Amino acid sequence: METSTSETETALVAALRAGEPAAYERLVREYGGRILAVCERLLFNREDARDAVQETFLSAFRSLESFDGRSQFATWLHRIAVNASLMKLRTKRRHPEQSIDDLLPTFQSDGHRSDPGSRWTNSAGEISERRETQQLIREKIEGLPESYRNVLILRDIEELDTETVAEMLELSPGAVKVRLHRARQALRTLLEPIFGGASK
Amino acid sequence: MTCHDALDFLDDYLDGNLPWGQRIAFGLHLGLCRPCRDYLDGYRKTIEASRKALSEQAVTSCQQLPDEMVQAILAARSQVPHTDRRD
Ligand SMILES: [Zn+2]
Image (cartoon, rainbow over all chains, first blue to last red; front, top):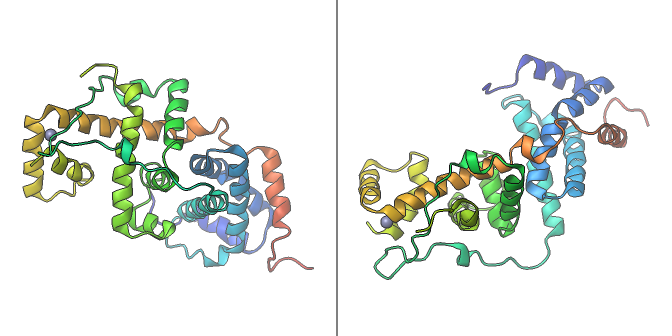
């Protein structure tokens, strides 16, 4: 993986800054698919994702001057897409969030597990190979309370580091870690019926 | 270490960030505790499965932006003030 902007990217950025229409089109065509995937992951809604993609590119066009070339151009664009999606989520936020507590493991007073759960005999690859199962898993992720779901997606799927996620969500790094841990536990509980074929 | 304590160490363990003393204690607990081993296994699979379910190929049928979206973005771009434009 390259850590800084490649020559092709540098040339593209220069052409964009010069306002060459062909460069804009190249940018949108080259990165559009990936950006759409990012927005769909965070928004779970095609229409909203399309809006966020448009907002991502317009925002990138506006702030081209602020791209300093220290990070990869793709990384810079990726962050703009995440921020555009989060912004979209903020405008849509409706009811207060459900508590996640019921989905967390419980313990006896001596600290031992009160419900050992079932063993997951299949590998993640075997289980998530089928399209229907992937859809089911996406629905479970979508069902997580938004503040947990966002942290899980940003950390585990978008692979942003704790500090970056903290900044994007205006949380402390500690709070990001706690939410990620709880989100993974809750999702594990939700996936148990899919994976946990074997009984205890 | 109890199962409850072990749970708190999971993420640091998976990230390889557990100080060695805690790592040993955690490993000892896992060695003796089947439910925690199963829990860790499912926890790992949860992360892996969510990555697969939300991978690029899984969420988008097309790797490319539909043409009408490209055109819409480029059209909207002409509304964005830029130094190369004359109004
Ligand atoms: Zn245990």
